[in-house]
Amino acid sequence: MTGGRSPGDSVDVAFIGRANIDLTIRVPHRARPGRTSIGTSLALTAGGKSLNQAIAAARCGGRAALIANVGDDTWGREIKATLNNAAVDDRYVRPIRRATTGAAIIEVTPDGESYITLALSPNTELTTQDVNDAMTGLAMKAVVVQLDLPPEPVTALLRHRRESIVIGNLVPHPELDPATLQHLDVLVVNHHEAAAILHTSTDNPLDAANALQRLGPRTVVVTAGPHGAAYTHPGGHGTVPAPTVEVVDTTGAGDAFLGHLAVNLARHVPLWDAITAAVDAGSHAVQHPGAHTAKPPLP
Image: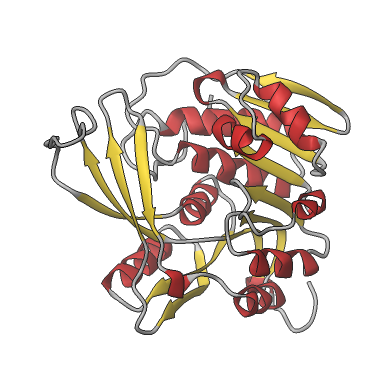
């Protein structure tokens, strides 16, 4: 650690991104044009990819911190309470006065597939100063940043990287310099996101991982749902299969994967073992409703 930090300022992984409220409804099918689909009662829970990942990391025994902004409203207070209950360090989750907390509208169909629309709250987007404050005040072994954030806070993070493992997630913001990817130690995306970044479609996640690595990241992991995950790094490449399970809800499965992966990489677990544990976590998550599930049972 540097400066005047105390041991309490150190975490395994810091997650930089967004926190919002999930508004979830289970529907028999998605509404067709001009028609209405009637579903279950609305469920309101704290969510957002970075929040979900931080909770997943904490539930597998990691020390996790979230860096995000919320509105100074009822939803923002619900998010802070959820983080507190999950033992996630929330000192850098800042309530913004007169701002509304963002929301995600989630439809879950009978096959467990989730369809998500995010209502952004522009006034709660992270700024360069937010990231600088957090990176100065926290020591971390690894940091996960959502690349769809505005470019300025992502660039600020990379200036502060020090000895931390830097993991990027999601399709980069359109205004983010593509050369930024070469500063990532690890890029983690699902196969749909990989196709969007590469501007092509491929049924082979390993081919996608190899193509993404040529953009600059040292290590690339591409998740493929029931087909597990593929990876490539300077020491080689390969795939990790997923177990066959009954799918109840895919919401948050990728976040469970990434939360577990980040903690294990922070603890210097070998990459294949870390990905295997993350695949198991994602497979466990899809068997339960909602984005937050308890720690998977030990094999």
